[in-house]
Amino acid sequence: MCAKRMHLPDPRTAVTNDIIIDKITRGSRVIDLGCGDATLIARLRDDHDCDVLGVELDEDLFVKGIEKGVSMLQEDLNAGLTELPSQSFDFAILSQTLQQIDRPLDLLNEIFRVARRAIVVVPNFAHWRIRLQVALQGRAPVTDNLPYEWYESPNVHFLSLVDFRELASQGNFHIIRELPIIGYRAVKKATFANLRAHSALYVLERARTPAQHKEIAASSI
Amino acid sequence: MSTKLADTEDSASPDGFVCRESTTLYEQPNPLVLESGQTLGPITVAYQTYGTLSPRKDNAIFVCHALTGDAHVAGRHNSEEKKPGWWNEFIGPGKAIDTNRYFVICANVLGGCQGTTGPSSLNPETGKPYGPDFPFITIRDIVNVHNALIDHLGIEQILAVIGGSLGGMQVLEWAVSHADRVRSAIVLASGPKLNAQGIAFNAIGRRAIYSDPLFQDGWYYDADEKPHFGLALARMVAHITYLSEESIELKFGRKLQDGDELGFNLRAETEFQIESYLHYQGKQFVGRFDANSYLALTRALDYFDLSEAYGSLAEAFSRTESRFLVVSYSSDWLYPTAQSKDIVRALIETKRHVTFRELESPYGHDAFLIDQELPKLERLVAPFLARMYMDQRQGRSS
Picture 1: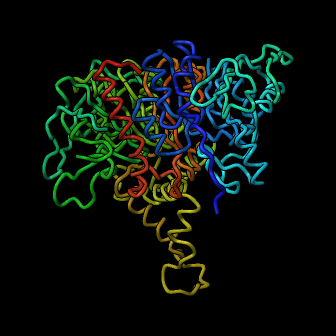
Picture 2: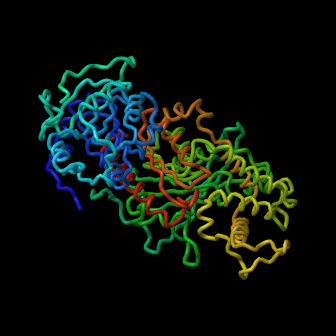
Picture 3: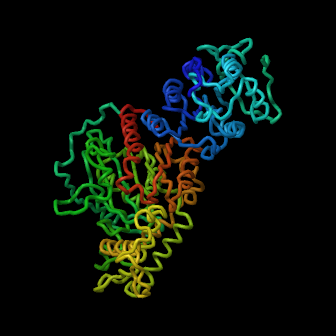
């Protein structure tokens, strides 16, 4: 039996690669953790002079990366980033993966060991439709873009934008941009973002001192 | 890849036969100066080629063979030959390394005994085999000789150098010490150095040879009997390191060779099938290999340590511009995945391009030579080469 699905825009379409690319400085050294078929980083390489490296476990996708001429690594993100030397990248990309990681804070700390900045896209499980589904049906949320029953979902954590901000306050990094994604758009400022966004893109930066955490002026609804 | 890249003619002979070729380099007065400082020359190099060198000479792939391999990497020399070359399933028309598209060269290593100058070759100064007088050689020396062969063949750029195990070490040496001509490097089941465990197993092999009474300090070439016992024993020990606990268990288990009851007889040397298999491997080996070559090449293996040679691995790789593909095997305990990862980490540190994957296999170190494992390897190597070739033609650097 499958709980009724709600339609929410696929964040991979909504957070188009354009939005990510827009945040990455031309000529940067970029690593994409969970890069899929390496479309995004191949574009960064070809159109933005970036030096790129993809990380992907799935073998079919891995081969697609090779076909694009992208350097690919097989790395279990749950096991840390042991192959990656410290401070070897300008940017790390982690798109729609953090909620699948056993220990998200450990991975984020690892990311900022190897990269100066990170673009992280996370789903927002506090979207109002998910809240309604939980409240009215009394069921764990199953949506089109997160179409998994609770017992087979790769998503092992459920977080909201508020939760992510709190996590960010504990790591070796701080949030320099938060872009809630509402519908198919990333919006710079949104009221009730935690209620309306189905996911969010964060630009994070390694903290110069462990205490440095920038406050995000946003409501916590 | 849908892109049509090859502009070479279908060059594989229809019958798949291949010729042994050889050339003599380093004639006096220009001998090779070895890493040890000694000199050696002339040096004969045995090699084989497959496919056709493109008019632009941009499709050459050099294959580095492992410890006891040879230049006969694919095809057959004639219709009577039972077994084709050692990587026949991987190299040929339409195969992973497609000889319709690429020009493939494989040469026997310096110090070997399959056509290239080694301890069993005649020393021009004495008219007798070099034997133990053969100078100490290293992997760099081996690669230097092959580099001279590439010069001799009139090739400037090599699209890819590929090899496993000792072959992989040669690939690393190629990429680092002949960086100007190696466009890409494919390193299989190998490492940036031989670890202590590897040296330890080589030590047993050498001790087996030294302690064979027929070895006679290496001067056995005139004798009726060669030190086959020691060499076979060396091979038996080494062969175990090429397998895995799982693969031996699957293949042999505790199966008995004859009958199905234990004999309770200490004089029976072969009771279990695994014993018979190892004896067979040893016996096969002595028919085609020279004990002095085994000593020379295992020492070359022992001495290999890129970081020691260049100060650090990162220092070594800072010399290369090659694109790398590094592959390890999950059950390889002789060159464990961690060693491949050392290569990968240093390459990333030096901002070089490296693709790395550990392949799941029960076959241990030898997996890169096992036919049924080759499709997995092909999935990585074929697109890597195709892309490399395309980028090279479009003038895109690594």
